[in-house]
Amino acid sequence: MRKSEINNRHTLITGNKCGRILSQISEKNRGSIGSYVRRATAVTLAAVMLGASLPVYAKAPETGNVTNVVSDGKGRNINDEADPAEGSVSADNKDGDKAGNTASDGNAAGKGDDVVTLRVCNWEEYIDLGGWDEDEAMELENGQTIYGDRPIYQEFEDWYYENYGVKVKVEYSCFGTNEELYSMLTLGDKYDLVCPSDYLIMKLMKEEAVVPFSDEFFDESKEDNYYVKGVSPYIRNVFDENEINGESWSKYAAGYMWGLTGILYNPEYVSYDEASTWAIINNPKFSRQVTVKDNVRDTYFAALGVYKHDLLTSDEFVNASDYSNRLLEEMNDVSEDTIDDVGNLLQDVRDNVYAFETDSGKADIVSGKIVANYQWSGDAVYAMDQAEEDGVSLDFAIPEECTNLWFDGWVMLKSGISEDPRKQQAAEAFVNYVSRPDNAVRNMYYIGYTSVISGGDDDTIIDYVDYNFGAEEDEEDTFDYNLGYFFAGDENSEDYIVTAPMEQMNRQLTAQYPSAEDISHSAIMLCFDDDAAANINQMWIDVRCYNIKDVPVGIWIFAGAVVVLIVAAIVRRKMQMRKY
Image (cartoon, rainbow, N blue to C red; front, side):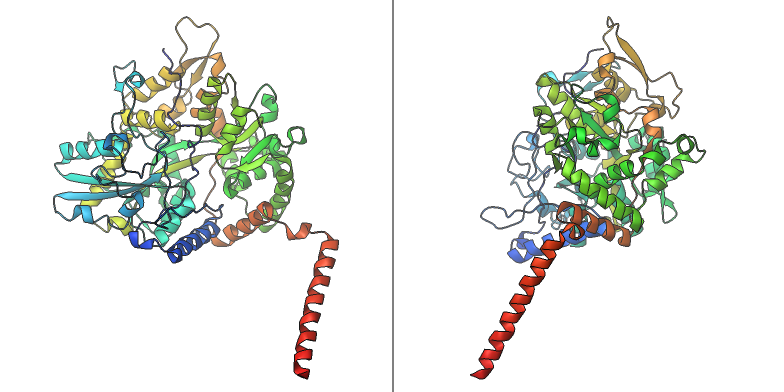
């Protein structure tokens, strides 16, 4: 099969799951400094509540508004005025209103009874914005042609009218972090459909802030129910088996993208064995040559892997009948003693790594500044593609201790849907539209991550995998890669085997679609309770900023002396003033 040269359309600077994105203000009258402070404070509180790192703010020029800087992958802000075919925020937004303005003014476009306004908020760079060049069109083996002309959310409007006879206007906004989204919702911004990560989905379910999908959404007899008919059996089981408040995730959330975390590395300097353990982040051999995430949840997970290495890799533990449950428990250990010990470990990690980073790790490893990078699987695929263009070969390894299984998914918000059946129907239809196999391929190609959609009876997705990674017919140095667990729910199925060139081993194919073996060593990081989140957040502050326990005794003596002198001076001055 012919393989595409690249797997996504990101630019190196802007392409990443979380993005270097600044916060947005949704209402035009929030342009004051006071609202800026209020928003910044809310995001700080959200970070504390969710136990994660903080986003960065900047005032927009001239207006003083806090704005959301969102790139369209072409070096231009998606919020700027633009031709609709090149990625405008709202399909009918011809005068270029900011994305953030849609959150609170969403009803304005839907004042007429014949128009439904659907307010969608998604990660930056997380949907196909169209504008493909003609030579980017993909002809798959099943005869399907994949091509992105306009943004998917614009094309959805036309599709919805054709299929439901109702006009819908999508007001599409972006957020940069889960904490930012949570703060936006806390401050009263209104959205109908949002796409947070797994732990925020859990938190919103705990808070009863989301609306369950309708029975019609799960009806596999309906032709347009692409999600329920096409979601991977493996993903379906994960969503069905995990519960919040006694209810499954699948009742309230529909998956969008998924993946694992691991180590992206340069095999010229790092061996596979060295990269296949979280201990690389603290390995003195690679002092100042490794980066970790500037995100408390991701880095805490990796540090737990180092801290619990002996237990997690012991034969007794790995071969236990309840291995998966025990692994989940160990990788969500937030006891006070464990947090303290992991915090101390991360102090050493801080001294060993090149940097804590959110986005720069991809560029740093491609340029040769570092030799290993803690990375999400989708960004690892992207970095490997970029490195190839520069003549550099990078590999991706799953740590032997455990890998983090993560998801981003769609949920409908009570505050937006408001028991409006027209809005709910449109929101569910949007989820189905982006889950249609050809659209799932478009999104994967554009953003580089892996869709939860396997396609069911439609073989578009497996054909796309073969298109990207399959070996040419005359290639001899190949290996068979079985993806039966993902496409059929059976890791022994022989219907979904991709014959790939040997060069794909531990590279793009195995990063984008991990093996059943790697999946068996994965665990989901759950939503922590408030006390645990506060403890972890304080630990993170200590690691990233200071650690009061590490201050030398001499500094304390000096500081105490300074305080005594200041107090003495103040007392003396008051006594002198009394004399007069």
